[in-house]
Length: 256
Ligand code: PML
Image 1 (cartoon, rainbow, N blue to C red):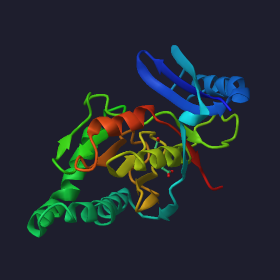
Image 2 (cartoon, protein in one colour; image 1 turned 60 degrees about the horizontal axis):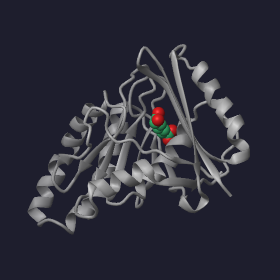
Image 3 (cartoon, protein in one colour; image 1 turned 180 degrees about the vertical axis):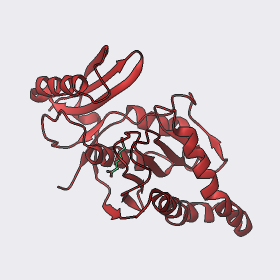
């Protein structure tokens, strides 16, 4: 069966308002396209003056099928507690074991001591970026070819997702993206805070940890959000990883 990739982006005075993407069977293309336009036209950020919808045919053999990461949930009282929890999960359950096999114990201790402060500073640098930061834990360098834009994971959808869905569902979209990202060559983990001022839940994810929803990672009405992909250049090249994130077509089997 042939599939089609649909991507929509809408803007107002060159400022991004909304976007969406799907990979659907041929018979769903028209309805999904209509739902995307509806999403663009009814966004709380205002009327778009530009909407771009791109539709491309995708052959079924080119699609990788993945099982969604298992989901767990962490309830916290404050955004500060949520961020602390996110950093410590990444430090202890994702990065520590990867680094331990690559460096001496004293180098590891130094790396882990600085990890949370470094990550917190990097996260602030992502706030103005449209895409994610690709951060190499082996060298401490950022690897995005365009540092202002960042790297964007694209060409993914949930398998059998409801045909038409005009409204954004943060969790449904994030579990698909996080599953694709966790499967990219050299990927160690991801941290995400939504840039939607009305959405305070974020997550950390990796193949080992699964998808950990942290129910509060920022204050309401705060539009600062961002993503960091923690990557290990000893395991794969940045080019390979970016090519996977930006070009590989992925459908994710999500448990209801
Ligand atoms: C975004 O706005 O794109 C990020 C969504 C994060 C979703 C977190 C969750 O609800 O699990």
